[in-house]
Amino acid sequence: MEIQVNQKDILFLLVCLGLGILTEISFFHGKIGLSYPVFITGFYFVLFLRFRLTFNHRRIGLLLMGAIWVLAGGYLFYDNEFFHQLNLLIIPILVFFHIVLITSPNEFRWSKPEFMTLLTMKFQEGMQYSSAFCKGIFKGIFKNMNEQETQTIKRILIGLVIGIPLLLMITGLLMSADAVFQDIVLRVPEFVLQFNFLEGTLRVAAVILFTLLFFSIFQVLQVTKPAVNSIIDREKKKIRWDSVIAVTILSMLNAVYVLFAAIQFTYFFSDGLQGGFTYAEYARRGFFELVFVTLINWTILISFLKLVKDNRKGMKLTLKVMNSLLIVVSGVMLVSAYQRLNMYEAAYGFTLDRVLAHAFMIFLIVIFAYTLIRVWIERLTLLHFYIIVGLTFYTVLNAMNIEEIIVDNNLDRFEETGKIDVYYLNSLSYTGLNGLIALYEVEPEYPELENILINRKQQMERQPEGSWQSFNFTRQKVMEKLKELELGNS
Image 1 (cartoon, rainbow, N blue to C red):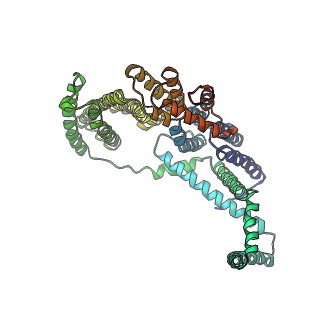
Image 2: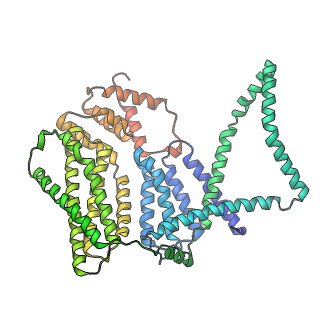
Image 3: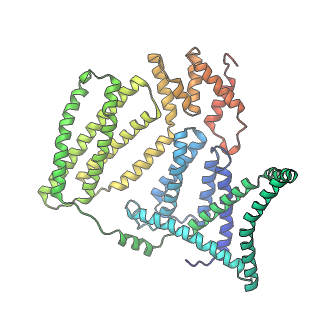
């Protein structure tokens, strides 16, 4: 790839340098908090500066931008370590998806698999541009040198490569021969480390790396219509499944599922448990298996809806009935799994895994409901709906502060049963600590509760003062409450 860099590109490179510096300041100076929304603000400011608000796909683009801001804001308002770790991957993916989407022609269907090809292509082009740009810089540096000067620089570099290992070996031998010389040499690293040269070098390298990444991606971002057409042409070949095979598979599966669903209804309308199982045994016995089978059914269903086409009226109606039946029995399995999880939570309390499993099953129910409509109204698109609902679902999970729901439910369960897992609440973020403080205010004698709070208070006092990058509203509020809390041994 040959590139021509003009004065405008150089100015934009300086802007990307500022964004690279902001990236290093935001993410490499302690715990991430306020710094993430600050970085997102800077990133989109550069994007708008580069493209001057001339964007396409505005409706889905606004939805994506709203989701990105909500997820980034979670680092400022909430303190959920699970989502914070996950969003370190999710947010960059969403940002890349967003900027490629809004710079591609409106004719390009983002809900088609071809869009994944476009994303991959843009990332590869960005890397190729970055490599070509670096080569161009080096050529520009050495283009005014004559052959003799170029050869001299090459010889110096070769001399350094050979001489540095030789110097280290000889220095080691001399240190072994003379103790005074050894003492002087060993003091040199201490003197150098005082200036944090290694840390500074790594930070400068990170700034350069991010600057090149942003600059190269922005430079190749806009998608032309010919490029879109070539992608669509490459993706036109489609695999088809035979309708008779599909009906055979669906008939066998539905026969088993209908029998299973009939048995499940005996549980739904009775108070007892079959086979003498305890609540925990009953809940554990099939929850994950039911969810896994439901996911298999969903995969089969999507495959048949997309790949099985038969225009014969009788076969078409048979496929619709079989697909609908598969959705209904999958719904029965989801309801059964949901009930099992409810029973398990009643017996053992609420945790992040259990609440997320609840939320995921609700998401699947919504997905299956829409898919059932799609079976009978064929003009509807599945992937379009799945992406929008999935993005909205994940954003809402981040916005509603799952850990606070867990803590509140466990405190409510404590009022009813007198049971609560203080060690689990302590394993959560500062929201869990806030729950322990609330528990201490109503039940200060609860076993081990005071010791846990004393340890957390001592840890907090030993921690250095946080930087602006790490500021978080939840963390700040809970730390102030913990400071004011009067404990027995404090």
